[in-house]
Image 1: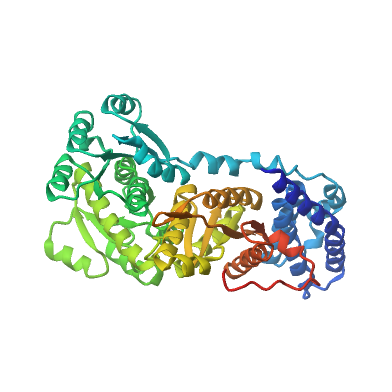
Image 2: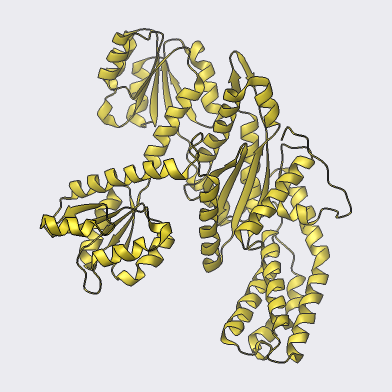
Length: 557
């Protein structure tokens, strides 16, 4: 954490500390009212639940861990009494917590510079991969600009001038892709001596020639992509994006099978192929797992003791949000008429037992890939490939519900390109689109697979960070902002740079989709008011002087 960030966070802690006496007095007053209230009057208890909830969220976010846990315990106990319609003030555990409230408020918070050493930081850093690229070029000076561009986006790039050094590198570590920048076909022939398509490492060829013969030679050699020089870097980055997506795609398969041994066998086979699986052996648990797991495909037995696969498929299709999930029957039924009848109810395909492990893997992979492609057309922004606005809200609702059940934190981020109108006016909309795709590319590359990024609209983006408190989100987004500000964009021979502003809000301080989006948007707006190219959290919005008139943004964003 930078000194400026530490200072800012300490200021937030100081502001919170100054307000703690008022919070404590409010909670004590509500507790006293509960002790004298008639059973029918529960308003004091509801108000106290809200106060404890707010205290827990803000205190934990700002490093007051003990006070945050106190608030969470009080909230949980009060809610349990609310559900059972019992008298809360007679609970000895609640009374104990109230007795130690003053002591807990005196416990010092964690230092701002120590807060980043927790599990959430490690989780983000461990899951952050730097894609390795090998570049082979006859003229290294001519290729340097492309290498610099890739490194700006945080790819790890190794440079080789001949196939002998490339072979040593390949023997040591396989890259994500090899880029061959050649002036003649001879270098491609040399590459073929140390690289084969079946190695699984894609080859991208850059050539001065655009002739049919040159392209055919590259194709026959097994090249994944071919570009004529000089190239638009955005084109090569799009290829890398595609390779990154395909290599990191982890399909989620829900297996509905009452034979546990068989289900575990199917799960093991699919897991070995890089897929994630969940087994349901009791159909009545199916809807719950569908909502929790969000599978790409349901692999379901046709005949089960308590419910047939056809009946289970019918129940799934009753829910609009599960209407598009592909259902594939896996059964020993060989009667074609019965298979067709089963498919009429809402399933998409039929696989017959017994099935070889290889056939199962391929069949599931092909169908899941096709489903994802169709879903992307409907659910994702066409320019960036990120989730669109409506599907972002669906994902945010899921993450907030999960965090509520697990008692975890979720940070939500709103991001905006600064002065984007000026970029469009100066360079044109195609270049503006490059900048938008540049933000999307970094979002995909810099964050975990469990994080969700979306294009909120225009030049605005959003990011959902599960299991991430505000201080960790602040560091991650500020690093992201800094990296983007150093990324060059081209307009012909001219390079230029752009900056971002961002606002962060966190659950459990904000519990609904609308409230957390509004809070993050307010933090983003304040970041722009304060000069842009910065990241602020909702905590800073809360402590803005309410008598100070807001600044008015111009039309440049």
